[in-house]
Structures are given as C-alpha cells and as structure tokens.
Length: 101
Image (cartoon, rainbow, N blue to C red; front, side, top):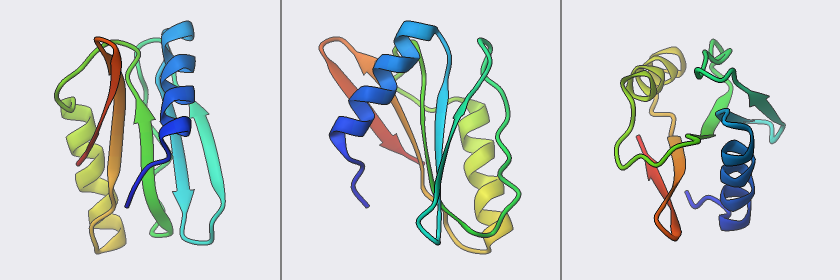
C-alpha cells in the first residue's frame, strides 16, 4: 500500500508546527478520522477490527519506530486477526521518512 506523498507532507508539517503527533485512521469502509494527540503523544481508539491502516506523525526526526508504535501495530493486528499496517512519518534533514510496521 502506498501513502499519498502530499498527505504525508501536510501531516508532517502540521505536526512540526504544533509539536503534536497526528494520526489518521482509515477504516475498511473508506471512512477516515484524524486525531490530534497531546504534546506528549497519546493513545488511539484502536479497538476495532474494521481498521484498514493507521498513518501517524512524529514532530521530531526519527529513523526508527517508537516502542508505542510497535505495541500499537501488534494490538491492531491482534484485534483484527490479520496484519494492519501502521505508518509513521517524520521530517529527517530535507525529506520525509515514512516507514511501515
């Protein structure tokens, strides 16, 4: 699955300007919901087997997923009974890095 690069740029810019993480949850029926997390991150309402994927940002440069990212990806997949992609994006140098868990 490919993430729209314009969407990634927009959400990373929002994250950098506010210092907050943003999480876009996309559901199997095509609906989407954008969550603005607190300044220290936060938890997502992930207890649904209808989640298709999650795309979220980090306001500071990261080359690796956080432990919370890994745990969230694990829990999403357990609830669904199948892998659920969790994408994380942040700005690194002059570009944006997006990685999938």
